[in-house]
Length: 130
Ligand SMILES: *[C@@H]1O[C@H](CO)[C@@H](O)[C@H](O)[C@H]1NC(C)=O
Ligand SMILES: *[C@@H]1O[C@H](CO)[C@@H](O)[C@H](O)[C@H]1NC(C)=O
Image (cartoon, rainbow, N blue to C red):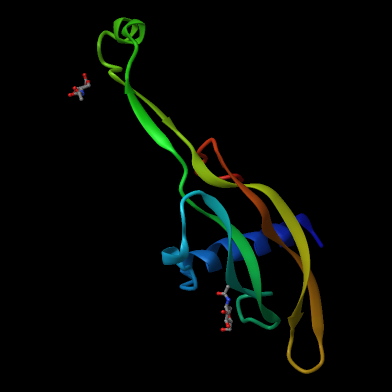
Protein backbone atom coordinates (compact mmCIF):
# COMPACT_ATOMS: atom_id res chain seq x y z
CA UNK A 1 0.00 0.00 0.00
CA UNK A 2 1.29 3.46 -0.83
CA UNK A 3 1.90 6.05 1.87
CA UNK A 4 -0.73 8.24 0.27
CA UNK A 5 -3.36 5.50 0.42
CA UNK A 6 -2.51 4.76 4.00
CA UNK A 7 -2.73 8.42 4.92
CA UNK A 8 -6.10 8.56 3.16
CA UNK A 9 -7.45 5.74 5.25
CA UNK A 10 -6.19 7.44 8.40
CA UNK A 11 -8.00 10.64 7.43
CA UNK A 12 -11.19 8.69 6.77
CA UNK A 13 -11.00 7.20 10.24
CA UNK A 14 -10.57 10.63 11.78
CA UNK A 15 -13.52 11.99 9.83
CA UNK A 16 -15.65 8.97 10.59
CA UNK A 17 -14.87 9.23 14.26
CA UNK A 18 -15.89 12.87 14.31
CA UNK A 19 -19.29 12.18 12.81
CA UNK A 20 -19.77 8.94 14.71
CA UNK A 21 -22.56 9.07 17.24
CA UNK A 22 -21.52 5.89 18.98
CA UNK A 23 -19.53 7.80 21.65
CA UNK A 24 -20.84 7.04 25.07
CA UNK A 25 -19.69 9.84 27.34
CA UNK A 26 -21.96 8.86 30.24
CA UNK A 27 -20.01 5.68 30.81
CA UNK A 28 -16.78 7.61 31.46
CA UNK A 29 -15.23 7.64 34.88
CA UNK A 30 -12.28 9.81 35.85
CA UNK A 31 -9.08 9.27 33.94
CA UNK A 32 -8.13 8.63 30.34
CA UNK A 33 -9.19 5.27 28.98
CA UNK A 34 -9.49 3.14 25.87
CA UNK A 35 -12.88 3.66 24.31
CA UNK A 36 -14.28 1.43 21.56
CA UNK A 37 -16.23 2.91 18.70
CA UNK A 38 -17.49 1.80 15.30
CA UNK A 39 -15.84 3.21 12.25
CA UNK A 40 -17.04 2.78 8.66
CA UNK A 41 -14.29 2.79 6.06
CA UNK A 42 -14.83 3.25 2.34
CA UNK A 43 -12.10 2.56 -0.19
CA UNK A 44 -13.15 5.53 -2.32
CA UNK A 45 -15.79 8.22 -2.53
CA UNK A 46 -18.32 5.89 -4.11
CA UNK A 47 -17.82 3.28 -1.40
CA UNK A 48 -16.89 0.50 -3.82
CA UNK A 49 -15.28 -1.45 -0.98
CA UNK A 50 -16.44 -0.91 2.56
CA UNK A 51 -16.56 -2.29 6.05
CA UNK A 52 -17.46 -1.35 9.62
CA UNK A 53 -15.02 -2.14 12.40
CA UNK A 54 -14.58 -1.51 16.09
CA UNK A 55 -11.45 0.52 16.82
CA UNK A 56 -10.28 2.20 20.02
CA UNK A 57 -9.81 5.85 20.87
CA UNK A 58 -8.58 7.44 24.10
CA UNK A 59 -11.29 9.40 25.86
CA UNK A 60 -11.49 10.91 29.31
CA UNK A 61 -10.20 13.49 31.70
CA UNK A 62 -6.74 14.62 32.70
CA UNK A 63 -5.71 17.07 35.37
CA UNK A 64 -5.21 20.76 34.81
CA UNK A 65 -4.41 23.50 37.27
CA UNK A 66 -3.61 27.20 37.50
CA UNK A 67 -1.33 28.85 40.03
CA UNK A 68 -0.61 32.51 40.72
CA UNK A 69 2.69 33.07 38.95
CA UNK A 70 5.89 33.14 40.97
CA UNK A 71 7.05 36.61 41.86
CA UNK A 72 10.10 36.25 39.62
CA UNK A 73 7.78 35.48 36.68
CA UNK A 74 5.62 38.50 37.52
CA UNK A 75 8.66 40.75 37.56
CA UNK A 76 10.11 39.33 34.34
CA UNK A 77 6.78 39.77 32.51
CA UNK A 78 6.08 43.25 33.85
CA UNK A 79 3.14 41.79 35.89
CA UNK A 80 1.37 40.50 32.75
CA UNK A 81 2.05 36.77 33.21
CA UNK A 82 0.03 36.52 36.43
CA UNK A 83 -1.31 32.99 35.96
CA UNK A 84 0.76 29.87 35.38
CA UNK A 85 -1.24 26.96 33.95
CA UNK A 86 -0.34 23.32 33.91
CA UNK A 87 -2.46 20.97 31.83
CA UNK A 88 -2.46 17.54 30.30
CA UNK A 89 -4.69 15.95 27.69
CA UNK A 90 -5.99 12.43 27.22
CA UNK A 91 -3.96 11.06 24.35
CA UNK A 92 -2.87 7.85 22.66
CA UNK A 93 0.45 6.52 23.95
CA UNK A 94 0.55 3.40 21.79
CA UNK A 95 -1.08 2.73 18.45
CA UNK A 96 -1.57 -0.60 16.82
CA UNK A 97 -2.03 -1.50 13.16
CA UNK A 98 -4.76 -4.01 12.48
CA UNK A 99 -5.61 -5.76 9.22
CA UNK A 100 -9.23 -5.51 8.22
CA UNK A 101 -11.15 -6.78 5.21
CA UNK A 102 -13.39 -4.57 3.10
CA UNK A 103 -16.27 -6.10 1.13
CA UNK A 104 -16.39 -4.86 -2.46
CA UNK A 105 -19.65 -6.38 -3.67
CA UNK A 106 -19.83 -9.85 -5.14
CA UNK A 107 -17.07 -11.99 -3.71
CA UNK A 108 -14.30 -9.40 -4.10
CA UNK A 109 -12.42 -8.36 -0.94
CA UNK A 110 -9.72 -5.86 -0.15
CA UNK A 111 -7.40 -6.09 2.85
CA UNK A 112 -6.16 -2.88 4.39
CA UNK A 113 -4.44 -1.83 7.59
CA UNK A 114 -5.94 0.69 9.98
CA UNK A 115 -4.81 2.21 13.27
CA UNK A 116 -6.38 1.67 16.64
CA UNK A 117 -5.30 2.94 20.06
CA UNK A 118 -3.56 0.32 22.21
CA UNK A 119 -2.95 2.37 25.35
CA UNK A 120 -3.80 5.80 26.67
CA UNK A 121 -2.20 8.33 28.97
CA UNK A 122 -2.44 11.91 30.17
CA UNK A 123 0.34 13.74 28.34
CA UNK A 124 1.28 17.04 26.74
CA UNK A 125 -1.66 18.57 24.86
CA UNK A 126 -1.32 18.52 21.09
CA UNK A 127 -3.89 19.64 18.61
CA UNK A 128 -2.71 17.25 15.93
CA UNK A 129 -0.08 14.66 15.26
CA UNK A 130 0.44 14.95 11.55
C1 LIG B 1 -21.04 -1.14 16.83
O1 LIG B 1 -22.18 -1.37 16.03
C2 LIG B 1 -22.87 -2.57 16.38
C3 LIG B 1 -23.98 -2.79 15.35
O2 LIG B 1 -24.71 -1.61 15.12
C4 LIG B 1 -23.41 -2.43 17.79
O3 LIG B 1 -24.11 -3.59 18.17
C5 LIG B 1 -22.24 -2.22 18.73
O4 LIG B 1 -22.72 -2.00 20.05
C6 LIG B 1 -21.40 -1.03 18.29
N1 LIG B 1 -20.21 -0.98 19.11
C7 LIG B 1 -19.75 0.14 19.62
C8 LIG B 1 -18.52 0.04 20.42
O5 LIG B 1 -20.29 1.23 19.45
C1 LIG C 1 -3.82 39.13 34.87
O1 LIG C 1 -3.21 40.06 34.03
C2 LIG C 1 -4.01 40.45 32.94
C3 LIG C 1 -3.15 41.25 31.97
O2 LIG C 1 -2.30 42.13 32.66
C4 LIG C 1 -5.22 41.22 33.48
O3 LIG C 1 -6.03 41.68 32.43
C5 LIG C 1 -6.03 40.25 34.34
O4 LIG C 1 -7.12 40.92 34.94
C6 LIG C 1 -5.14 39.63 35.42
N1 LIG C 1 -5.88 38.53 36.02
C7 LIG C 1 -6.30 38.51 37.28
C8 LIG C 1 -7.03 37.28 37.71
O5 LIG C 1 -6.10 39.45 38.05
